[in-house]
Amino acid sequence: MAENLTKAELVDAVAKTADITKAAAAAAIGCFLESIAGHVGKGGKVTLVGFGTFSQKTRKARTGRNPQTGAPIKIAASKSMSFKASKAAKTAKPKAAKKAAPKGKKK
Image (cartoon, rainbow, N blue to C red; front, side, top):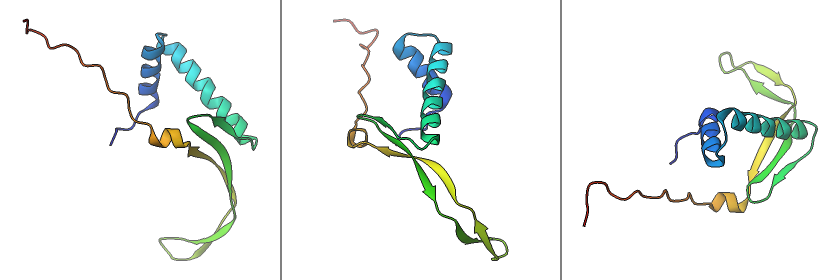
């Protein structure tokens, strides 16, 4: 299983792949995330073909239990962001890294 990727590591990867500065990559990723959050927060959907769809889900109000006392508590209705991966994203395989030629051996 792959390790978790932090935002800083994502910025490094984008900067390296796109051959841009880390500051430019951080700004682009920040704008991307803000745009998605803003649109979904207004009730819209964001679909990225081949990747997935971001949407807003609504949870109904319900009764829960306080785990320490067992007393019933009211849990308010809430909204949260949801992501559904596309079929292509679910079945995607990582690209193999290019292997460097072995050093020190000559024919």
